[in-house]
Length: 310
Image (tube, rainbow, N blue to C red; front, side):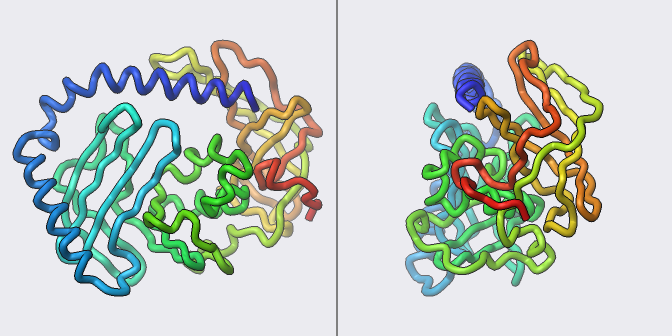
């Protein structure tokens, strides 16, 4: 785990340095950072906050954010009539900024951006989000990331209070990077079950799944562009399936004898077995491969000690 953590931190630092070098040039030619856009952003934010001061009992208006405590801070303030303002930044500076109108329905909140959403093919906030209440907590979950939200709950790194107790910040960015929590809800209680759409309820496990790799298939590697990083994808079979609560799209963790983790992405599900892809990232040369017998669990290991096989 330490090696993967160092790898992750190194990539973050390199990315932050690159962002600092290019940030000034990008802002000079991007209209979202123009003087006119800056004034409009400030005007709109002022109006939003004035509207918020008049609202009572509107759970889905206010400030929502995501912060991975390393390289990414997403912040959005929204109100029904005045729209929204949004920023994406790191501790090194501002990456993206936008504003616009919102369209609210019973089941979703849509953001109508003034400028194209994202930069250079990257987006930091979704254009459509699903409001999810979990006890006293309020989330805005991207419509295409609801399974990842369930995976984070199954993994024991959500609600927020569990992230650090399980060292879950290492993996939280993969599962929750564009899911937003209402500011001030960090220490509130997640009572009962999260109120997610009915079609996703089957993705919440009643208890942790623990199994092992039963067979190892073909593997392929890809070199990442402009990087020394190597991605390795290995097909494996694990000893749990539909009857044990496994569904396609779930993500588990493979724990080898040295204590290192890899992600196990469930691809196909049978009654009592599932095929999956193990995704590993290395510098230059892969230093390990998946083998039969490696433990696979639905939950981050420190939150899953003592989990029983279903």
